[in-house]
Length: 246
Image 1: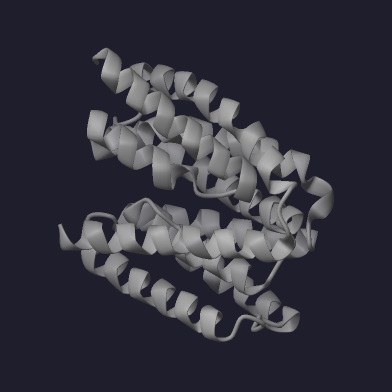
Image 2: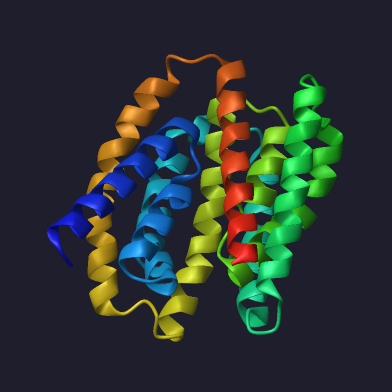
């Protein structure tokens, strides 16, 4: 790996950390594509597993008092973990490109709807009924296609949560899926000891960027935070469409 590759990786991981610190999600959207350019997609995903687990453990603990409901979070995260296991088993049989393309279109429609109806949100009684099936679908997407944000982040964004509530919930959800994904990648021979060492090294720039993102987030309003999440969802959706086409 050349010096320019190392610099590119540091920049990508640092920017991913800033986004993670500000919103509680989105670091793989920047970090994984950058690492995929340097290595390859399976290796990029594997490198990101340990940072993904540890940063979400950190944020989950940091914002633990902001949980909207322990029952809601546990059901949502548990369904996500189950879905990740199912998705991993079905990985070889699902048409991943088509699935991601459809999901991307749904997310773009949601963003358009939110822009036209900015005050719309999902009522709490309904979200309590939906958290298990949505968590399961998000987990299956993570296991089958490596990304759950179009479902998991969209759902929580539709609840119009405060920043702390959003991060507290999504962090536990991501942790639960990581605890399933890491053993699966080890079993498949993708997460080797050498890649695990690179994964550990990736923590440094990622953690370096997170306090910057958190500092920036404290200086923006709830409305601005909501807009940032919508932009993040838009970037994710466009990337899914790009990957599906190619």
